[in-house]
Length: 414
Image 1: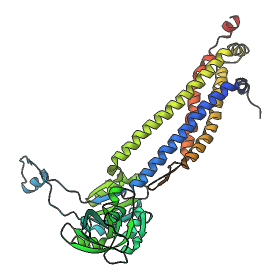
Image 2: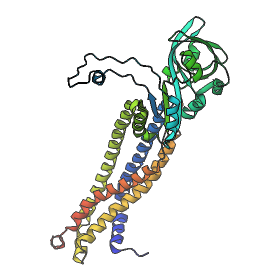
Image 3: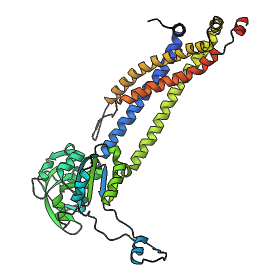
Image 4: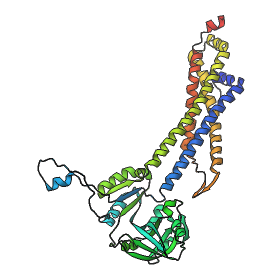
């Protein structure tokens, strides 16, 4: 394929200055490979911590929020034009349960964005084994739905979680509870609720979430067992947990559910505001570092092309004297920048992928984290190459523009 004269001249200039061309390409390569590595590390760790936050937290939690008395109540009793003033408002006495929970669940399940819904009854309890007592909380769940939402099975270190449905008055306890009370699968455990009700329950399994606070306090039991322990009927539910097909839809869906149900709907973003803030701060820091790296690479290209113009100033004058326009001269030097960007970009993609892959094999072995979490997200590679080429074009534009304004008469006379 025949190439244009401008392209041929640009390639000749690049090949005649091999060291400078390699140095400039290496700068772009380093910037792009670091862009890919940093973005892969950031997304990989963010995805891991988000996944860990969903180990026990649903995408949306629906519950009966405690309400504080307001002027609306006064207006309902005193219906006149007077100004209602309420001082020192107090929380209203109300049941923590949700009215008609299973009707609400049926309504929620009709939404195509919903992946799973499950009711839950929670209560503070005292675990007793022999003479040792330990405070904690028990979650009454439908264990099959709970496992579907939070993959409880992967946290099991002994026993069978499905025995909650098969063994009467059975319980799954955290690893910390088992260690502090010296319990094993098959042992009995006395559980006392805040209302004084007590049950002797059979330990059918032990789980470990690697979150110490949860493992030392939390347990699972069948929802009907916890309802009985709380002295409530089978319609008593304290919260409804919802998981979505796409967890990023949680804020919008939570607002809709709050309107439909009339109960507080808390999405995972609000429940983990500090985590999201940490993600944003880290993203700003990493992107700043990446930007500086590519900026330095851009200055390197700028300096190399600038030096080329000074060294080739007479040749540029001869080209213009032979009829090359300023636009043609701009094209010659701009093409050099693009070729440098492409060479550095392609090598950078390979190095970035290789570096990411090698780091992803670094063994951590802490809790549930086996290897350093890295993401191989294709858009990162497209963004890196695009960003690298744009940087090189921007760096090459000003020297190219300067070359196009060379006056051949002045240079040849000088």
